[in-house]
Length: 335
Image (cartoon, rainbow, N blue to C red; front, side, top):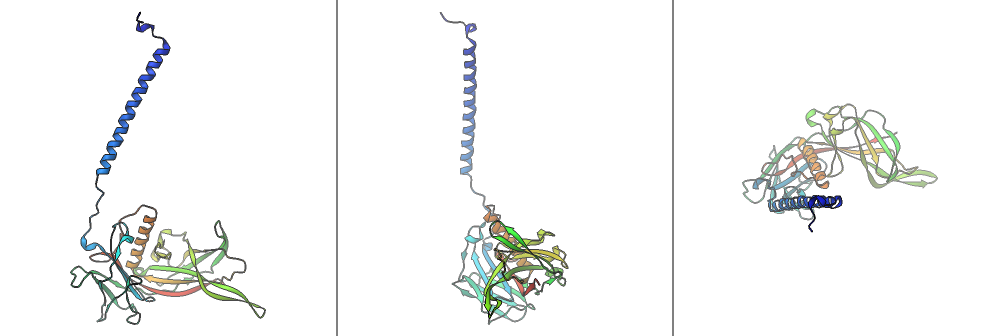
């Protein structure tokens, strides 16, 4: 005899309901999986976003005219638009440096270092000149890369109070020295307020000479680690290019601003530590802005979030910059 539906036991009814719910869940899961597969197929078939830029802008020319170094220029053909290191060096270009006088100079190529240069004996950078650079990819190239710059004045740092030196504990290197400085650049005009600062200490060897303790310089130096500026952090940038400090003095009180440095390694008891030495370079605005932009680009690549290649340039028909710098070397004594 066939049982009637009203005779179904409560247990059997519960099992039937669970089966219906399970089947419904399987159906929803299948639909979700199919949707994901369709989306992934569409994504894989899509073309990567293409960045539009002119064929005339595929070259990168970098040149900083310095009063303390030989004149050098680097010329590259960009590969990946988002990666300035992917380009290839161009070795057979024609690069000329002109001035607002009758002086004109042609770069030579240094194949070992892959840079163009002008021998030191040929010309020392003169802050009184206006310089123009032109780079031709080939003879009679109608789209030469071109830029103009002036050379800023050099300035000496004024120390407005006695430096404060104290011990600080670092988890990796042990006890280090923290150096707090109050500085000023009071005579700098607003338009010339861009600087690059390199700080270091000299390393000495302790010697006993006829019963007297003397310290003899080893010839080596140790760079200072930039500790920051609490007053106006945005005024200072740690360069990802060379580790120096880039700053615009107009963003702080140029008559009294703070800087903090650290020694890189542990300072032992009796270690000779009497001064901080520095090189302060006055920068043209183009040099400052290009190096800040390049540092941001390098940092973006390091952290995997790369923006389009360097957002600043003063070069016509390409990327890059022509800028200038003037260096002043001095020391700040702790005694």
